[in-house]
Image (cartoon, rainbow, N blue to C red; front, side):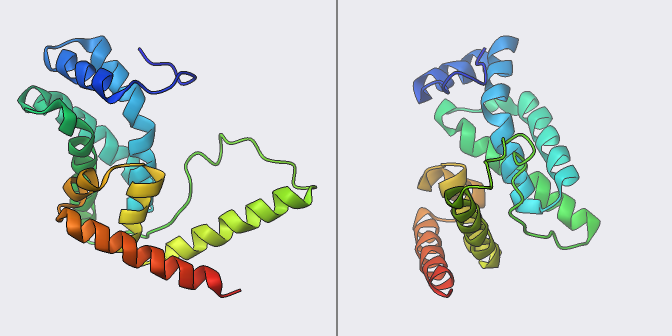
Length: 190
């Protein structure tokens, strides 16, 4: 099992965990859960803007994934497959509630992050810059914001983002490019 203080297993090691979990190995499944759960929660919170909906969607995705895992043919596709399942759950929840999700950039890790010493000028400047960047990202259209969050914050690859968002890889690239351009413009204005 992977502890929070160790580095994440390599892609090959994660593939082996997927294969073991497909054969019913519970400790392999637990390790996959530990590796991906926090990232999925963060993604879901940013996607939906609602922590409760995010938790429900991630839990539903894990339950569904546990049943469907034996049918996954390519262990390399596990991560994008899992993110896509969470996205589907969130979209289903949004449709069933008949309300629009608020897109926010509240970091669910804020409560666990130790606060820096705000008395120093450097810490204040860094906090202001982070806040400014979060506000700029929040102003992006949701289609561009999702691409930025998945690429930079969740560190998914272009092909994985394409699977999660169900769009061609070229479209992901153009959305990332457009979002970067918009961010430069938003951040250029003082």
